[in-house]
Every structure is written in structure tokens, then in C-alpha cells.
Length: 180
Image (cartoon, rainbow, N blue to C red; front, side, top):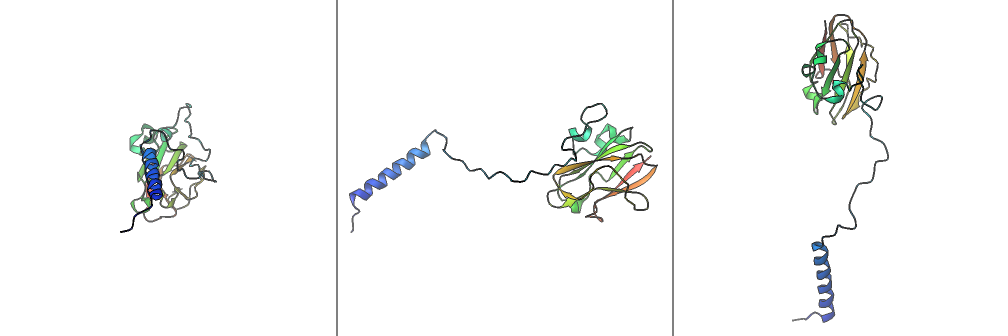
């Protein structure tokens, strides 16, 4: 049987002792892994880069609870200057918008926030009148991949039903805005 030289055994013992000391030390490691910072900034969901404020200067209900459905907000009942929110949850390409129905007051401008929570596919929200023509709103209606929000200033609309759609997923992502 072949024997290992004594110098090899000493080196092996020193390495084992150093490894054991390093593992049981209470000191923090001298290095950590962190991914390199991104060279491009993350896209802002809001056109202004900041949550919008209501007429009182307080944050709008959509800034406080961006995923709140219209039924959960007092302003969503269609009062003057209402702030409505429509979300595209993860998987919205197959499940659709949340909520699929909204109400607003006739002849009163309002704010509509599109909360795109879906990081799997691009979505947008476009209002259409009864003829299918897009309603001109103030804000960027181009499709984008979430998470992010877009806030639209909607002009006063005449009474009637308006459709809201995602132009990327026309058959599954639709809803109705009833203006009374």
C-alpha cells in the first residue's frame, strides 16, 4: 500500500482548518452577488411619471388602490369628476379586463386609469362609441407590457353604452361603459 507524503497531509489539514474556520466565522463575507444594474430605466406606467391627484389635491382612488374595481370606489358610481379603474390582471389575454362593466355620468368629464398588471403580453385600453369609432381621450393608448398604468382624461360623453377594448386581444378583452 502506498503512503502519502507527510507534507501533503499537512497541507490538506491546513486547508481543512481554514475552510472550517471560514464557515463558522460570525463575520459577514467579504463579497456578495448582486446583478449588474440595468442600463435602461424601467418604463413608467403613468405619462407624467407620478400618480395623479384629484381636484382636492389628494391622491385619486386609483393612486391609492390601483387594482380597485369600479364597484369598490364611491367615485365609480358616476359622480362628477369620477375616477374609474380597469385592470388587466396577469393572464388577461384569456381572462379579460377586471371589471367588465363601468358606469359614468353623462355630460361629465372623468378620469379612467388602465392598470396593466400583466407582464406576459402587451395590452391597451381604447374606448369606442356605438359605431366602433375610438373616443378621443387625453393620454397614451398604445399597447404596453405591464406592470404599469396609464391614466386617461375622458371628455364629457353623451348618454349611451361605450365599449372598451384591448386592440391586441379584441375577442377576449372587452368591457362596457354605461354613461347615464
